[in-house]
Image (cartoon, rainbow, N blue to C red; front, side, top):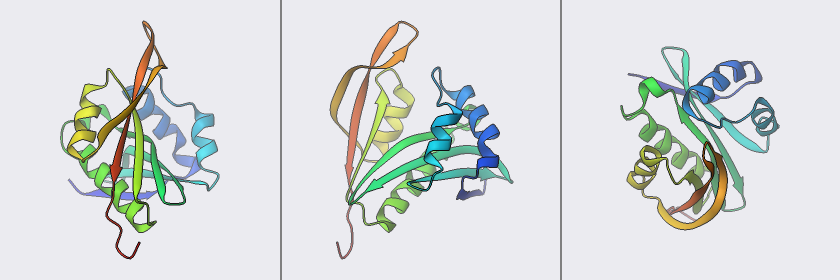
Length: 152
């Protein structure tokens, strides 16, 4: 499987939103993605054979980065695609001289937590009742990663 990455365009939003809705009980809205496409964030799509199968939204402020959204079509989950998307995110952060990266994940999202653990992220905090859920609210686990930056 050959993966290709390119910057997300507004014309990609229909496909991106379809993958979001397939993947999450509380997906990002179109407005959330449009807000990220304003140039302040890095928005990427992941393609296989020219078809969008995932996406990634990164934020960089000085030497800190955050993975705001990472998503792989459910049919491809568990096949190493998410790990490759995480490695791509790390490469983007290193290219931008980011030394610390953060992300948040639902406490109930065990597959994502395993992915982040495997990528070297560690739990550094928790936001109680942060995410809406079918049963009310659930915690967000805050995870962090220190990167080695050459010449930094």
